[in-house]
Length: 124
Image 1 (cartoon, one colour):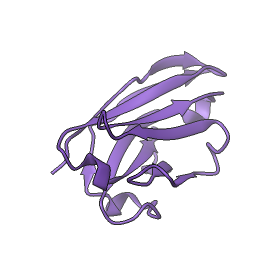
Image 2: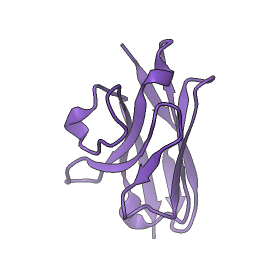
Image 3: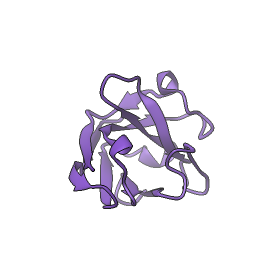
Image 4: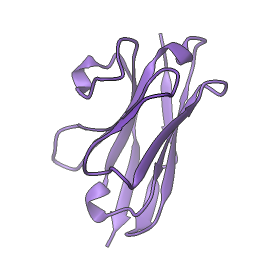
């Protein structure tokens, strides 16, 4: 079992940057593909980015491509989401999630473990 704890959210002006972190418990972190999702107010949870278990594959939603970067440090059991050029439409609760099966998964329902979420608010 994997427990995930996100941090790094906050209030930022449009054009600013934030770096989210997701710390995982357990010794099997390096076997999990890790995703970031977000849930804007009143909307469904949506895919943001994913990184494979060994970090050699990443994929992004079109809405964040070129602005966000996902990375991981398996020695620290942590996955990161660097968010640059933030826009008001990036406002959401951001969640990290883990699945052991594939990095080619963007569907929230196919992820096994979730963090509690961290709020990101981008003001205009």
